[in-house]
Image (tube, rainbow, N blue to C red):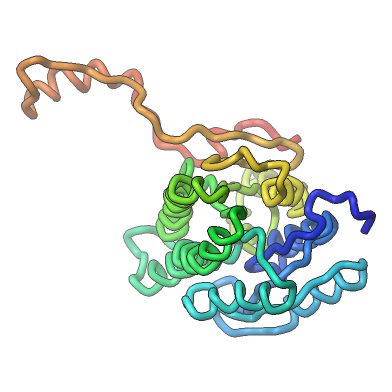
Length: 306
């Protein structure tokens, strides 16, 4: 460490940091000088089982590179487990400066076949976990007059995807949570932002690759490695991003996008008020050219990642 990194002296907790994107985020923040709490309970992609190995390996990698890190094996879906991540940061390093809510599981399925269990499990980890950990860190951030939340969202929610109603709903919920945190805590110097990553990981390995077009898409995805997402997250955790809050970013290989939040597109006023019939006869014909089509991410990002 040279001592000139953006996160020198900061303490960052990264969830789901034992593999994939989370690992890349933890390593990048450590390379920028931060002390890291590496959280990962080591479960499978669907959230089953546990393994202390992944978190321990990332901790060892950070320490071998001259950094500081400790492992935490809690599940963020448990409020007490999430609180232990913050407690471990304070116990090991004396403070906590940034939270990266990255932990997630995947239980894909078509909506008409989605079980209540698969729905709740995904929502509990992605959305519930983001709330539990953010809530645990909030008093510390408030008392010290600053802090950063970075929440991983997804274009599956921002745009759409087939067979991911649980995942998409949770990821859009995270956008609302992040915006509320940004509004509620700006008086304390606390900021909150979202990042939607395009990256090849075990979260994307389940994408079908049967047709030639699908196989080509998967090969393109494989070029979008997790380390491409890490610089933006490290920046958002730093004081250099002190004036950036309530935003939605997206990273696709070497591209960074800023997403717009939902805002009114058009309006139509009728002095007499509206009835179902006048909505059908007047409102919808006027609005129809501005209606958005049903799309998935690949319909919007139609060019190869660069």
